[in-house]
Image (cartoon, rainbow, N blue to C red; front, side, top):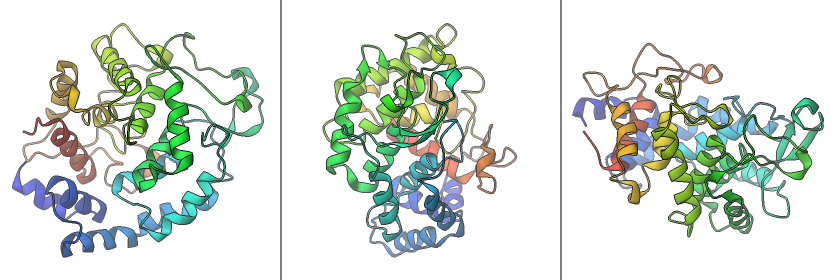
Length: 325
């Protein structure tokens, strides 16, 4: 990693500076510079605005899981930048989120699936495997891995996996909804975020479900020209650099897979990472090649200049996979 890139990251937004110090440089959380970066992050207007938006958790209806502005995605972003149960601002959010679990511990959100897609056409409290694993991931990363509801949800989520990955599955409240794919096909996105969630939990990181999920994603990359279950392609759009990690793209997939030590020498994963690293500019920085309009105003929500958060994110992936250049 170029020294100039490190200096640039440390001068950028406080969430990038904080995570650079903690993860890329290995600085102690008690160091004065680390504490300062964290304080600046928590006080930053953009972070405060995200936290304040959770007042709408009970009223925001999920009708399109790809909507980048959904609170479920913002929850994961707060986890990714390093917020935890030690932060007082999170307490009411966590309490609200955990109030709507079912008997299996699965966390529910307001969802509306039209009748022509197999739903009721009404807003129901329910869950789908394209939302609840993201919430599970965030809560686990916040520090709630040992919470009874989290442990229950992890066990139930693991029980839903098929022999080739997680399939399109929803709670009973959501009727007969199923995405546009063959019944026995794995859903790539559900598999991605379910693998991601379980990897954060004790006892599940190196388990049969996470290994099946990882192999599913790698196999889809290996056969990306022929296999597109549920219309999830690993084509041109998939390969564009993008942040934050909230949908099905190459940065998100490698972020999840690079944490598994048993995949260190897998040529498929290394091929994906090499494709990403080849996009660096002469200074080792990365510019977004696609953007989420819902995140306008953030340094990664544009395609004209290098993004410090995206650059940190990619360097962290490379560091995890031990293929640092």
